[in-house]
Length: 210
Image (tube, rainbow, N blue to C red; front, side, top):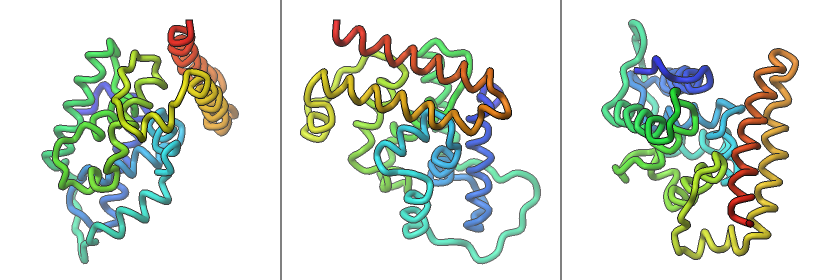
């Protein structure tokens, strides 16, 4: 199911399985995927989660308070996906196709998690009312057109175009910081990734402010 996942997205699923094993769960569920997205520290998803105080340590604390750990687990091979995770993967492919991408990245996975319709899942409970505003932030980060919902929470974050542009500048700095650990091992790939994301971000704000 993850053949077209980017290396980062595949790493997210590896982290998700590790989280499930640590909790002694015999399956990979949406909360494990959410933790995997936060743990993969170089992707778009992690950046957006951090922007709303949902770093890995915070999410781990929230989820561990909500989820009961198993007592014993015998594992033979890889853990299976729950139906909700299978749905998350399918919707992530839908996002990639709709956006004209030939791959599934962490941004597609996060959008799919945010779109999860079952409000009873742990991921939905943790994300709560932040889901819609985070969806908007993913779209902005990638340079997609956004129709902002008329909510007080979003107006407080984006009260005017000038503040939005300042927000973009802060995001650019954060992307560079996130890329820094990768520079030593694979400078070309790291720089290309950051440049691509920043170009999309700048293009969006140029369009908004023109």
